[in-house]
Image (cartoon, rainbow, N blue to C red):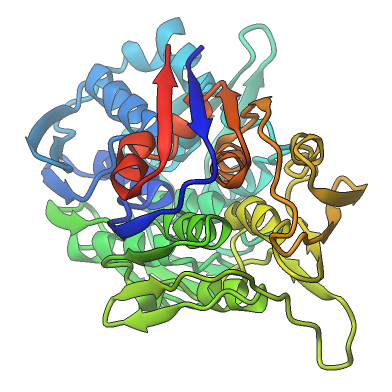
Length: 435
């Protein structure tokens, strides 16, 4: 298990480019199974979750070619049906949550799919009901094999249907969309997620010949087609990484420019950091964060304590609440962080409390942070990364702390952040990887 050794207290300076969006590319890679034609994808991040999914596609029989830095072509002309039922395939799926989005394309094109319970971050319950209920409405038959602990999904031909999703699940909506594009007839999805990742998926599928309308809204209409062709697609910059870099600049009191952020696709992220008192400026498609000695959390108009909570798009993504919580520990004032979606994602705050942060964990979903206003730096410490987003939050905390910190289980960070220590070292950070 690898570790980061972080010498804190060093300001950053310079420019940094965000990687391609992890949450988008996992959907896009699964969508390449919907056609026998070649699909070329640009701006693919070199991170563990993505590399594992590409490796899995290769073993499934997809022809994959590395065309250049961040660019791959995929041609799912033939897929090995025996491998899809093998113990190796099912075991690998169990360690990668993105595999859940293989169900829609596989059932739509090949008429069946098998999947063990997917893995991923340990951040509480993550229901699969939306995925299964939506694809069932299209005519698929779901069975759970208790002996092998896997799902067996079959359908001779999917048929379009109207559905009102029980929750606006991003991956659930993506799975249903990918199943519906090859279904017979029209599918209507109400309460669909509409994050930029979903918009990108829909736009790519339309270029391949799908007929999806209502993109960027929560009401999607999909007219099924017989087949899809190939296309070329470019993945958006990762909004979570953009937010992480904003937080790093504020915590280390640094002047940093984040390049080519696709600002129009960031939604409320910039304003969420502004609520913490962080100054940032849009310069073309870049974000400039000036050096700030302090930043003060806003109050609501009536003077009550600021609350920052996650919500479906266009609300704040839950993936950034861990970063926002850490940044608040050095702000002036207090804020209530409300993580509505996952009941275990705030449990990493005990590590921040050990570092000297003033945090009250009210319950599994809410924490009150009383900021130090940089009067007292966090203390260095030894800690372990429980998930991707908590991992980057702990890295930010360590970069601002006095002394040398050690973060274990950084494979969790590697799952979502490409070569992060080298990229931050260029800006002036002191981070070393220890095997």
